[in-house]
Figure 1 (cartoon, rainbow, N blue to C red):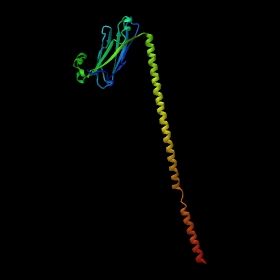
Figure 2: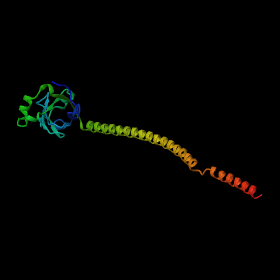
Figure 3: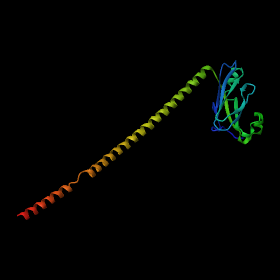
Figure 4: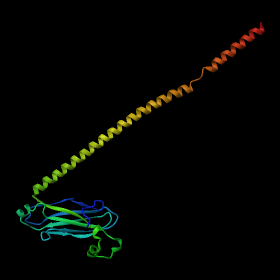
Length: 216
């Protein structure tokens, strides 16, 4: 069987940790989101190492191309001290594989029976249990990390834009120098030549000399 999760086939959220918020003397719920990133249907199945403690709805199904599905994970009421010692020990496994287009009439169970096990991918999630205050702190930390990440991205973008502006300024300076030199060459080329005036003066002088010679 293939191991690990292939991101471009199925995007799974959360990625590795499944958190439950107390009090655990009553039912606690959380969710797993599955997003199909392909243009084919995907079949999935969700299994757990503690089937008596959890209920998953739905625990299997078909996700259409570019579609998504949400599974609700329900933790049965349990002793909080027992759960505290079980941090990270309870696991969920998400099996998924591409559905053959020719199997449209088969049930989910039949699809899994006929699936190519070499092409079935596995993704694991570990369960963690926390109080409501711990959940609030974790979410605040998550938001803070998200904001810091956004600030870093914005800072990098500003730096990149400044670099591009500086490059555009350098190119603009070079262009202005080139235009100035071109204008100078054009002015020289279009400046009236003094040669025709000089030629006229010479011709008039020669005619005047000849005229004076023959008259005298």
